Structures are given as structure tokens and as C-alpha cells.
Length: 49
Image (cartoon, rainbow, N blue to C red; front, top):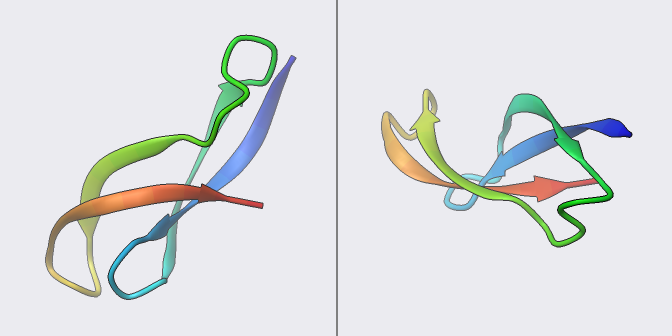
């Protein structure tokens, strides 16, 4: 079953992106390197509730 999650910037703590992930296959928190429009460069975005 896929659930909708939000991604939060590691630097400025803005919640910029939302995506889905499979809870049965990936139970740990997701980390992706994405572009943050507030910081204006690529940063690590982490999954938040």
C-alpha cells in the first residue's frame, strides 16, 4: 500500500515536496537530494509526518 509523504528541506526546514512510497517495502525514512526554491540550491530533503 502506497502512502503520501511530505519532504522537508534539511537546511531551511520548509516542506517543499510531496511524494508516495511503498510502506511495506520501505519502512525507514526517505532521504532525497532535491532542489529547494527557498535556499536556491540542491539540499537533502527528509521525510516528515
